[in-house]
Amino acid sequence: MNEYESSTVSKMLEAAGFTMVKNPDQAELVLLNTCTVRDQADEKVWNRLDNLIPQKRKFKAKKVAVLGCMVEAQRDAFLKRYPQIDLLLSPAQLKNIGTELEQVTNRNFDSYESYEYVHEANSSLFKSYLPIQTGCNFNCTYCIVPAVKGREVNHSPETLLNKVDSLVRSGVREVTLLGQTINSYRWEKTRFADLLESLASNYPSTWFRFLTSHPVLFDLRIIDVMSHYKNLCPFVHIPAQSGSDRILRSMKRGYTVSKYLDLIDRIREKIPGACISTDMICGFPGETEEDFKQSLNLMQRVRFETAFMFFYSERKETVAAGMQDSIPVELRKQRLQQMIDLQMDLQSTIYQERLGGIVEVLVEGRARRGKDFLKARSAGNFPVFFEGDSNLIGSIQKVRLIHASSHSFKAELISQERLLNA
Image: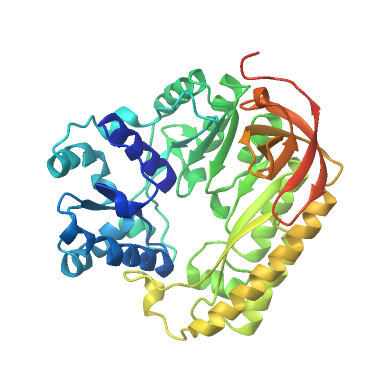
């Protein structure tokens, strides 16, 4: 979601006459779009500001703006620590950024809405994000998102279909639907599975992905729809967070390990070759060695194709921040490293097992590894590199996987089909 918002604001700035520079020290206007889910994200912002704000004394025309969730959570801290910041905008205020920037820069801006879902026709990625909801109605004890994003709000199916139609007409080949708990989507009688089916059937040549699913809400209808439509990518991100029932209860996740595993089994049974990724947290308050081992056991049992792993980070205004039995940070880091090491070993094996297989990939552009190599991403969300001509960029191709690392594949082209301009 942050990538999508940053891209939209960038389009506004370029339309107002700004040019992107690589070094923020050289910029006339710097905008930091923030996340506050973890302490590390906050520290990155404070460190950036420690460097940027003193520059305003030397370069009087320099403007610094901070956007996003960190503003909602820590507005007073920003005002106290850096009153020189020119603009603070929370997620709820982002729609007003055009008006706010006009006051800061003395330039004219169109509205934020004017640049939403606008895809650059000359983009080499041929991919786009599409938020279908904002906010969250869950109350996981570790999560600050509901406090900074608010309650869940969904967009109408008609609005979303119109936006997809516009994206497809501009050359987009892959659309990633975004939502905090995307499978909670509902608009009158339309549920998330209905929306998926409508998009897949109306745009059969377009790939669709979605992020992020809550295990409690992943019903059989979603699985059935995904198994029926080949353009619904067989990739599912379903955060487990922990492999301990006791910790899951403390997190208020609403499911058990057994139910989570049943869900994974159903997905893999109905969608052969499905790739599943997850989020895992270690070092949650009260987590014992046995609880942690159960998380490692879950990872070994499921064999996730990818995983985003973190040690627990306290967030103010969350229930978990006030819990007893806090785990020392050093122990959290040790457990995280164990978790990462295990996942890398699992991924290496999983990737090796896929060698020789034929998969479809969306060709994104030239690879850095060599002038004759293209970079692509499989329907299962694997990075893939292969030799090919530039005219394949933007097309969906079949390739055979011939070499694997723990992060990507090298492949060979099987056929040139479904070219973008065919």
